[in-house]
Image (cartoon, rainbow, N blue to C red; front, side, top):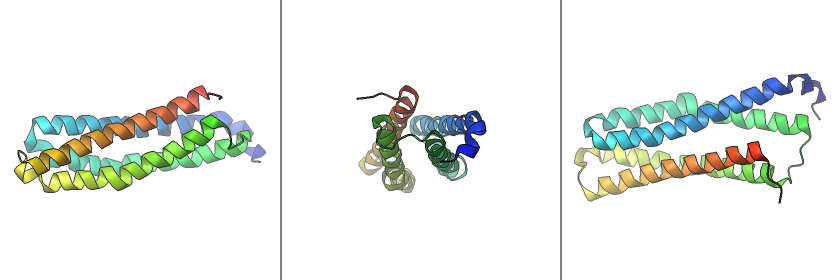
Length: 154
């Protein structure tokens, strides 16, 4: 469909892979930042603020580039959207995005709002939810990366 872009296939693939590395790396970083902030409550606001800023400035744009470059690669390669690895990867991509937007971001804001009472049960529940959700997003994105690289057929 976009045959004129075929000579740039390797460059498109490189952009796609690099954006996946940046996005996944940032998500792994979130989980670690949250774990470290739990150990030193004095840095919690910095950690969560850093995560929110990184999400806006780095991770969000990386996921957008990942989506756009993926769409272009699908069109250049003429891959049928019905292939398991491709369809599952796309669905999981959106699941991870929705999980981040609808669960992780509010959980982080709630955790930051409760940080004044970091020993209380409400704070501990919020921290647990943030950490767990961050790792769930990492797991989903890792599965997507595996699907894209291995292209399993069932």
